[in-house]
Length: 536
Ligand code: SF4
Image (cartoon, rainbow, N blue to C red; front, side):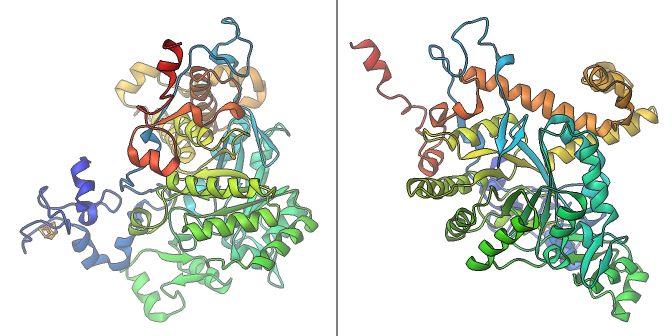
């Protein structure tokens, strides 16, 4: 979409997220409406769609729910592309200054996040009860395990599981949560990565944390305060009336009320095709939170994570203060712009703090805490990460000289895309319907078009047959693209370890990027170098 459109905010009335279009392209810069709006217009703009579907028009195309992910389309005027990475020639860090050793293949992308070893500074998640997470879980979980990274089981999995056993209000069995944990562990090497279980208000009421720790031997629990895509609780669509009623009975907010006879009649008549299931938002209180984290540890949680959204500066500061006091291991700040299954489109586009701005505030908080000698949790950033360049920049930005505060990134949509792409192309291959150009370039069978097949076959032998191709897709994306891409960038910056990446590796391309982060503009970076070197 042309820059002009974003600058004029005219995407207000036509978005690919909702499948809306305007009749003419030269729309009003203020409203996004066609300058002449006519009665006989066959197009569905945002207003037109809303006239028919009301609240449904707030969401990404409901028919795609479960088979898609969605994020913001707005240009937030500051993102990772507004920085470039500085390369070096004379200095070498983290490896011997020997041209035979200082090759990119020797750069190490290994790190620890909250003390958990990781082969790449990426955690995948959180994939909760939303259908797209459930359906794609085998590829996501096994692909994460193969890649040596952690994965987070998101919220509401036990509450949404029809086969959960709930005794006296507490979950004592969940087939689905067990499946999720077991699938990761099937190919886990026992060292790199972990399966983490996230809990929101409803999960805490149901005792999901205690069930996960004591019955499934889960080591890491994450508390959830929000997400970047929306500042309200998690939502999913339910296409089945009985299931909607079951969820209402389990304490969820279900809209419209599935027990209302008028609603049931309308649903059966096809007036609407799905219910919305909403989660409650937490309202954290200082003492309660610190006690809750202590309680979690006493229940057996070896690590405690906290996930929060893209809230205002005071909320960021308060979150860091509480997380420090409670000695939380990892805090994830999820910036606006990301998304997964179902978030209101206007909220994704127009609300909360985009990722780079958010990281700048988080770093300010981390520096203050550190100066005071307080505990600083490891930080993960989330919100629109899809590749190694963003990961490099997010980590480098956070190192003021004593090592990076940001230990890695959380990715949600992109691992799902890798898994869904693999899944769809396998289906096309089975039907002999792969695009001709794809077959010509990469071959017509998964063994040929997944480039990592030979190495995985060699590593896993007979067990290779148990690895779903979707997991191979995620492994290929994470291990063979992101890991290698990151190694190349590190070697270009002449840094062979992740903890060596620092702010001197970055330059700002725009004045806003420089102002928000303190990274010098290209024309200001190493401003004295030329005279210092040549005048002496
Ligand atoms: S209904 Fe009016 S504003 Fe909407 S697309 Fe048609 S002409 Fe344009």
